[in-house]
Length: 95
Image 1: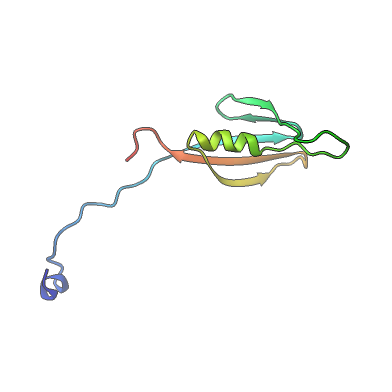
Image 2: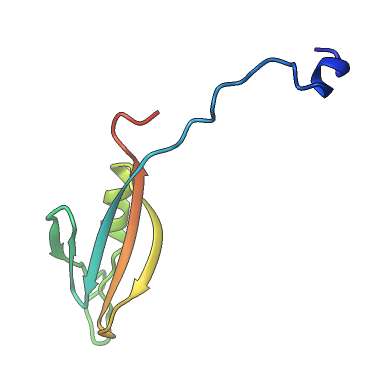
């Protein structure tokens, strides 16, 4: 395309940019358990037994990641024992 055509705005016309559509999942973590907005729930594993061991959400996140979910954010709640993770993935049928 010549510079002249480009400058006058008469160059090739591109279609509108595609809009990505997402679906979201909320996962609430409460001490040793988790539940999500799709009805999933479970207990968090403790990798090594012993005093002071903390349950880990990593296994749950890896499983969800395998199904296309990615962590988009984490927030606390009114209780210091509960936090919420927001995950997203491309919506089914989205371009």
